[in-house]
Image (tube, rainbow, N blue to C red; front, side):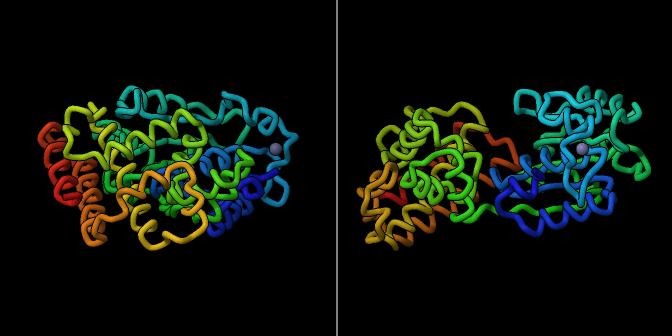
Length: 324
Ligand SMILES: [Zn+2]
């Protein structure tokens, strides 16, 4: 089975990637970018598996050659996956290791494939080292970079890649993805709506413990003003970004709830929606304003490293203002 058969959504991307395979002609570097959970990593992994096939049939993996037999194994000698250390940064040592990997000849395939996940986490030094590889179009290595933060990459890196934009999954696509994992269709519909096309978040929320944690974060948001600062369970920049995501989503749901109070899913009072009922009296213009503010806060946090206690105080004041 090929990745185009197991994939949901992104038909034009599938078409493009299939055409690379059919013609056996690959850009030196592809850059998959788009919001979190939009399928970038899934597509990259499966595309590489398919490309590594030694005897593709009509652009699909043959499932019989040595490479295909190695498919799914943790290790394939012609594939390397680079990820940030401790989710913080991709350091120069990792890029040097990758360069040693590139210097070796491919074992089974024509080319070696390097997947660099969360490429915005490359340090300046790592980016400059990687540039040397990206500037060698005739090398036997090919690269796929993924990022949800395109502006976080050096312009010189971006300009050497073929850009492939990934858009968020639609609610219908999310329902298809989720119904492969559970039969609980009320939960599927609710998660599809709450997670706004973020499959990573939706899959996490299939776990009841994660749902409880998410629910607590939402509750915290509506409790603002009541010593929230002391209660905030965040310590790092990443934790604040994650919380901002959760709250931006909550506000979108609140907008939807305001507009769709009578629709069946809301009436059914499924899991999270009931959390919004007490908050539905907040003025809609304030909700819209706050939603924009949170997006702005998140952008600022992505771009810079503010002093977090002051940053959080400003954020909480804005939320307090909107809710009172
Ligand atoms: Zn094969």
